[in-house]
Length: 371
Image (cartoon, rainbow, N blue to C red; front, side, top):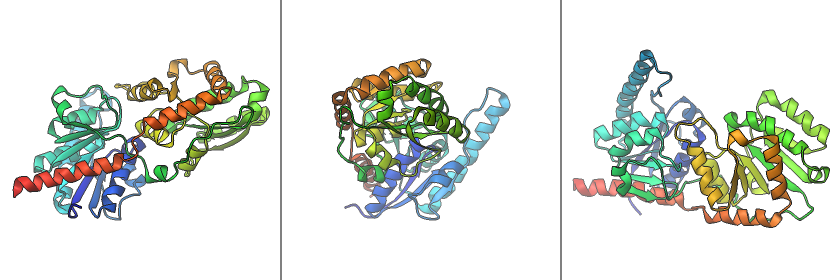
């Protein structure tokens, strides 16, 4: 085992970037290393895998609008973030930095490169994000969640290594074999999509279930995430249909919910796709539209092509299309089992270990070059 080292991780405060950072942090800490997180205020609030005093908020900003003032605000925040990150990296004596994407990772990545601290990127999506594209030329290695990554700078292709997407330890611990529903038995349906996905799911899913036959409706046990303002309306719809539904704005026990589900309706963020694969669960994926890089559509396409998911683009996501898809899957338990098996085939359970190995090799190479 390598001697203890100090690693800095940089990640935006969204789950898609923060969850794999936390998974790597847990593995590095298990190996005896010291880990610091550089993030934005949201990441500071939700990061739970880092000891007190090891999570640092640095200024960062993305371009909001096309005005000159918006550009200068972004530039000023990035410059301020670079100087703040340099101070943090010096104080904690970081020996390598791993950036997970999102605009809050840009200042730490640029700061590390300016200090000669080796930089590794992890790209969770099947399309490289803008932040990682900015840092790609300054990185020593790029770890990828998928075999093929679109919008990858040509010069960086030789530095890519497939590691898969690390998932939270609770997901790994909660893995259970998939058991397809009985032909006429209950169907445990899980619906979640984060704050940006819950609105359309609250509108489409209840109306889709209302279009199913009464025999199918009676078989459904539903768990659904809803926005607070949608809870009463959605609950009233399911009550009128006689559907047994558990609704909430947030489920803290999501690993257990995933393990219990027969079928999942969700967005297609990298963390969601990785957790579905690790759990080995069939899914209906509705990629978040509007993203410049269409990363969620690319992520969903990987599972769909592998036979693990059905993708419905949001323009075609209607009560009618969802009802038809649900009926086709619920009435074919063998297909659900095949989808679950295909999902497991696409999983990389040791992604955190692979990432940790790469991070340790960065430090070892640096020490060798300095000796």
